[in-house]
Length: 488
Image (cartoon, rainbow, N blue to C red; front, top):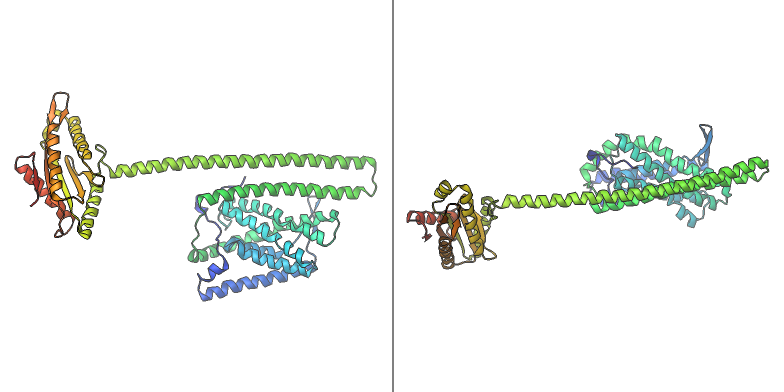
């Protein structure tokens, strides 16, 4: 299973085309960057010609008593470094041009050479995809990032080795000779990554990272993109494992059966056939296990995504609830003082800009402290709730009711005349006086004092508007309570 990235290493390869980067950096940096790219292209071509001339392809190597074949292709190191640091296109174009030139140099017809040249860019694409699907620190300074790099190198090598099939066909080589070429290709890709690309990337990445941080905005892929990339990576890993197993057994069996044609004792011939058949049985069992693991990983991934989505939905609901709690008074459900001040400021500014009238009603419950002292705070809360319900019954859609203090309320009435607001205040006073709040000992009659003030262009700010309503309320209290006073 591919290792997950640690939280401090969530950095994806840049997606920056040469054209985009050309317009983002200075002229001096353009010369260095694009000059370096052209130099590395020439270096790749030179080393590639050397590898063809000296036949660095399919070289036999004894390892643990077994003969394996490797291919040395230095251009791969350069191509992969560019792709992992700046994006796939940077290394893919270079890798394609180098491989195309070498294929033509080796005598391959241009149509097949054009197709053959896609082999290394395909393997590099798998590695870049792996780093985008499961982002890891490309400096390879942690065990997770090293294991991630090793696994991607193996899968990328299998896809890149598809070029061996075209090479063998175009050179009219017998099928039995495909094994050393194919094995040399993927093993060379894999070993070069481990012993050349990995160390170079580890040493060069800190400086590269600092340069990228100054010039590029490296942002994580979106959630939907990450899901699609991970699913695609699972498919590619599974396909790579199956192709590797199939080609290894198929080519090995062909080579073995070809050798058996030279005439060996029947016992050895039979043993070889049994061994070949056993190998194929193992392959199909292995294939089923790979497909099962891929399906299981996919289902596990969907479950994990679904669970995460549930947690995110619950978190969003909690945040919405918390945001509501921050804005609303817990007892009455009206806006609290902080939110009310924001509404008051908005309505005052709107009335100043548009010239439309807005009216503020400030009201207070008469003798509320006496209610609390005589009947208890539970009854006091019932009184506050009854007042809030009365206000809500008379609100228009664009009016706002605010619990401004303990027993103090505000009504903000945009697009209302002073006369209509005064009538509303009187209605509220009368209906509250007619209501009885039921307590355990007795039914309580509650009255209101109300101050009404209209926003004026002469007011300096909303505090002046609020002060006018407060002064009118104070006058209503001094005049005996249970009355409405309009600010003069």
